[in-house]
Length: 262
Image 1 (cartoon, one colour):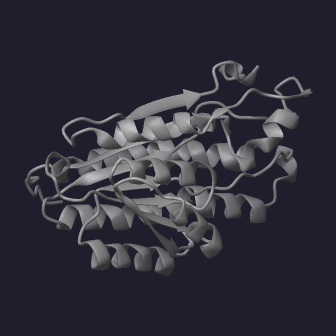
Image 2 (image 1 turned 45 degrees about the horizontal axis):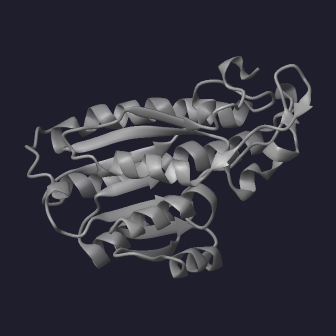
């Protein structure tokens, strides 16, 4: 590995800041993309549902803008096409938010199929790897050099829910990926951090209010928080100068079960 000297921090200039948000068609991804655009970022939202992406882009307000690009993060060719298009249109990349993910549901460990395991890992872990690898290459080669990668980790990167082996393993692995990118990115001005989220209110967490399996085997509703709290946390991490980094930040509903999941 070479030791290219980072050039001046692009966040310290008035040049447009370019971001990519995966899983941007709904939920956390949509909320964060809209917040970034409102703060002046030019944001590419990537996801598998073109109609959902278009609807989010149409809702953008503020000095920035949203640009939808249909992408399957688990497909290498699709990811390469995404980042090639970003560079072609905008010339650089300053931020990647690896948000795309899928749940494994609640499945007894000995009934977890290889198909389910691979489907979850392909999106949550391999997708984050593929996007990060392409973003890293762009950030290393561009001038000014550098940028920031933020991975959506989840509180499941720390403690599991019952029957969630595939999801929990993928999120624990994200922590290792985050630390490796942060280390390997040092010589090139590439910062990497992790945003661990617990019970943000989105369509995917509707079941939290209806009742979800607890560590003692009971089914109980759990409190949720407004997804805007996640967007605020992301804006803080994304807005730092590249000389500063948040390696790990957790934002969660205050009274949700977390310690020991009980």
